[in-house]
Image (cartoon, rainbow, N blue to C red; front, top):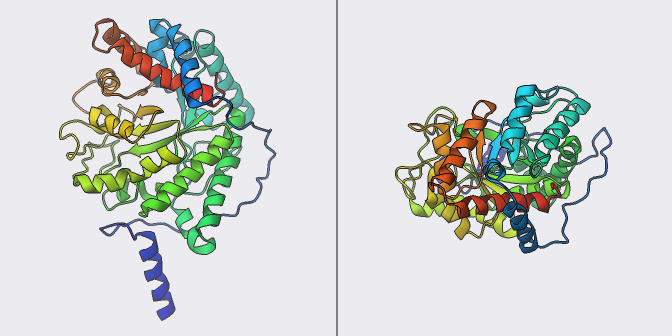
Length: 399
């Protein structure tokens, strides 16, 4: 009995050492064995490394300079997708008329078989590429419960499970396993046409966000969160998949799908929370970082981080040069304004990509185009955003 008590105490202290308050998260250890998957994967090239980021920016700037307003305003939108066995005429027209810079997929798009999914995603890319730069094809593929695919893609272990793995095999081997797991799964999703993964969660687990995040976080130790998220991004990158680290600067107890979360902590605590993002920017240069809908009174008392220039400025001050993505504006966390107006405000705040569902893809693009033509959004701001998007596409061979 005493041995069991000692083990429990050790487990809690190692897992939550950096958390000031108790965190209540129910989880179980998962067996993580770094073995080859059961089905073969077609060879996938690493992301092209011959061009520096500066050279990619120059190429992207030349491409964006040739865009008309329709292509330019579409490039900063991530669109949802209706259907799963092929594009309907309505969806095909929406894509061809609005030319989104990325297409976001969910389980209802991906629960068929590998060949059907591959055909659908190739069709989506082809329709947009006929008049613009091919879109990123994106998905949430974090691991654990966040798994959108059918049996043709392996289910990654949850982020939380790797904390237990550290106790079993040590830090170095755990990080190697995270990178290996991410590479294998990244190669699978790249094979069907996925080029962007809205993962990993790079938030430190706290008493404030535990109820919302659960086992999606790598834990309360900021150093481990940073190292583990970096290993995940490297693994996906080796498979040719761009990653979107999330949710900057953090979350609170309230689920943003349901209501507005408020993270009422002091500036010093906020610096600790954003530290993993700074490390990722420095060490692995993620393609994109998602800004959450949380309100941080220490930064901006009125606006969600996704609508606040303070949040995007903080990311740039950390040295981030990639794509700043706003979380979905259809969530109840953003209230009092339309999704279209929220998109315009976010772009003006320094966000580079906003989300739209098929029902409001056209109206969102038109709202951005009107704002551009009326001077509400400066052309330089949209060009800057679109250039960042295209540069990351070039970085991952998605041109």
